[in-house]
Length: 124
Image (cartoon, rainbow, N blue to C red; front, side, top):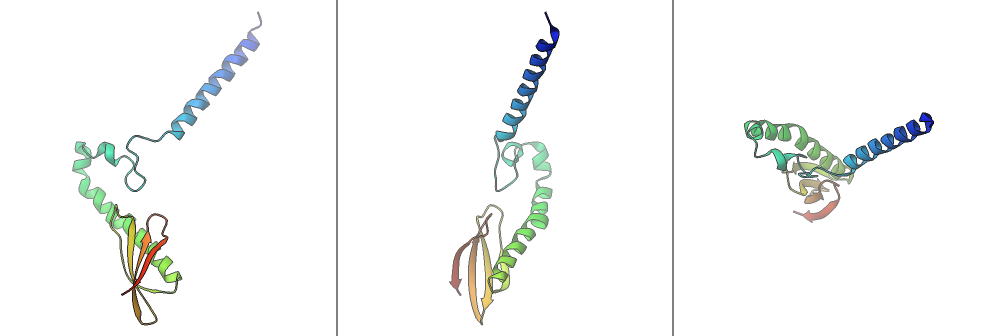
């Protein structure tokens, strides 16, 4: 019996099995996945490590993520021709509230998060 064909088929099947394993792992998402927050927050929020560093996690959110979200919202409203006065966003909300001015009139503008589409423009 020739060993080369047998070796080739075993090697090919093991490569295919490895690729299927990797592909399946990439397609399935973890159980506690949340697109609007920490990926594993649901899983780890009851652990002692999370409770110990909860204040640090909230500080990181306030200092890193929220200013970026507010700046992007301000840029979008500014590009619409408004002068931005104030931007408010709270983690977990699906809206960003912007106070702006255009031609001496005040407006309240609501943008959707995470796609930043205009939900409502109201004259104040």
